[in-house]
Length: 215
Length: 215
Picture 1 (cartoon, rainbow over the protein chains, first blue to last red):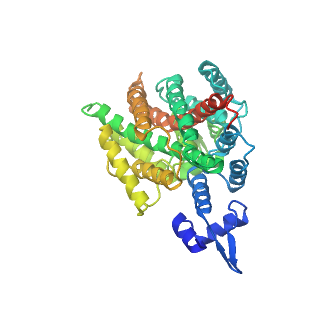
Picture 2: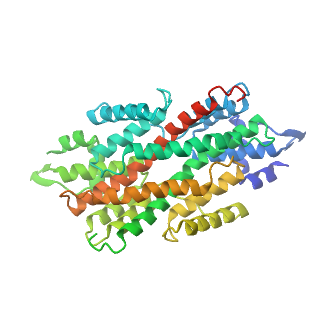
């Protein structure tokens, strides 16, 4: 296909596609004339993956280049590739806060990971992301919901089903295709979970407060 | 306390506190001299709530004003207040896409909400947030994870425990205090869930790929 069709099918403007090419995120097409090139399905797949990373994952362009390099490098294991993707996702945690609430929250995270028996790198940005949310909960004197372990167990149950199913659906796919589809699944399912949580909360609130005129 | 202490304890710079006051998010202190005012615990709580909404909830300032007005208005039910908060949270969904993937995704969302028996307003932004993620999954040819119903059931189980516990911990709290702590809990637990999901995924990936040299 030509550039115009690539733009139409990917729903990415031509100027944006050219920007991605200049930034090295998208490989050039096959030249067919001085100012024309032919693009294939691999360009379309790559563009859709880039859009998912940008729009849903809030990944900066420099980090996308790094992620895509790992997607393309057959010597990188899928586990390492997942790590690179996940560590590049927004929101990036801020600097660790040194006040007592911040320190207590980091201890709580370490203890939880121990208790759950989770194998997580000491560098994982999600540690600080969790600690900063816990510290903010404490500072805001927020109402206590279910225990942290309840949330952790629910997420562990989902992850244990998700990782194998996302990486094993290899029906004739090349490694690059498998990697692309697994990265897209990982990033997009995070948005799916947030949206479902909001819908479920609206329902739970409607049912809980129905008839409770005291509130 | 005076402004300097309010700033220190809330970890919000004085200039930012004054900005919130000009924008009507934070009530003025009690004047004690021409250029001095006294602030209380209610100012501290309010500032922490505003920070949670800004930093974690990505709520724009105009929407925070609307949320806080509902927190303060005793004639508004907690259910309506939760709705106002949730509908103001980022990321706001973009315009519904009119292509076949977008339309199919919206039908999938409607069907899921029906199947789950969820009571959700037709205006809930989370509907479109979910539909856009599902459409992107489809377009990116993303690997299929567990079914949408699996995710929805996990979120429903959490919400059913969370809504009652967050709103019932009323031990001597005023309605405003209860509302503030419930809003903070709602917003911050979303970040907790995202962070826990990433930690759980790193662990599941480490365990799944351990020894699988083929990947």
